[in-house]
Image (tube, rainbow, N blue to C red; front, top):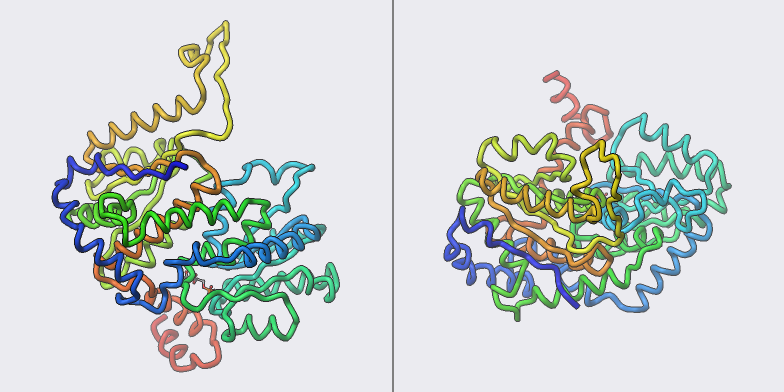
Length: 447
Ligand code: PA5
């Protein structure tokens, strides 16, 4: 079986090759720290050997729970925010037929999301959509106290109990949370919901290959065994036994740190398939929360090409030269479509007749790469042989491992997120949450 391939050759016009390969010792040492637990944040390293440690019995258990929800529900709402929903959404969108949810005769339940915003319109529209549906809820919150998720869950479970009755609602709710802490754990125990534990040593943004990602993905009818197989193979490839040059995670970590040192402060993750949009959203969280601290860190941005070539393309081609691109390139599409010949040729497209649509996409990709390099944008490329569960599994683990190594090279703790508390504190103070009396007074005095 092939692996996903990282190509960093097109960075070398911008940073010296020997400087990048000069990271060998450091990157290998950082990788070792992840495996030996001797670096910063070492109580959150459960993801490092996670793929290879998941038992067949556990996978079967996930598949059984997923089947229970699939049998009962036409819609399943995944309630969670950040690491508690992005991984699932990334995988489901990448691997599902984008139009399946519009089909009357679809085999899979529609998966929708909640608890990732506080928009009244969003929640009201969701409530309305669900009002005549047999639906279930997977409520995911590691802390069990996240306001966005807890608020959505309160609304959703009230609706479900009203529509299906308390007894049936209980059978259609699954809670994924901490082993003992948090309001969700308490609520789930009291109400008798089926509950699963997010391992203590796996942070939200590294949890896609735990039940947090795997249960929604299985509910969507996707193959979690293949996903994990890909992740296991990447875990092996990025282990400490592999040489620096043979370890894509170490190389990616090295080259992006060298680019950063040379003024490339923004990394843009690029895709050429709309299905990959949420892989980029997941990646943004992974790298943004892991590296953006102590006034350091590459700003992770993302674009969908060719769509955004007609908007952000101008900035990328000619704006401030502080960016580099990492392109996710899919070698073989799953479907084939040939462009038809038109005898009238009024649209002037007969020069494309007989070609595959993907051939046009690939030439757009190549043309863009050349144009952006000419415009001063270093280009990294990650090639997926195909867009399937196996290679998405490889990609997820590759990005996780590279993020850990990269964060250590940058000398930050990649596994904490102290900065996300600031808005919460202010919001609670403004909403007069009990326990925030002093903060309430102080913040209101500033208004
Ligand atoms: O990566 C993280 O830890 C965060 O983004 C969390 O995933 C997010 O804040 C949701 O937290 P919780 O699962 O506790 O509700």
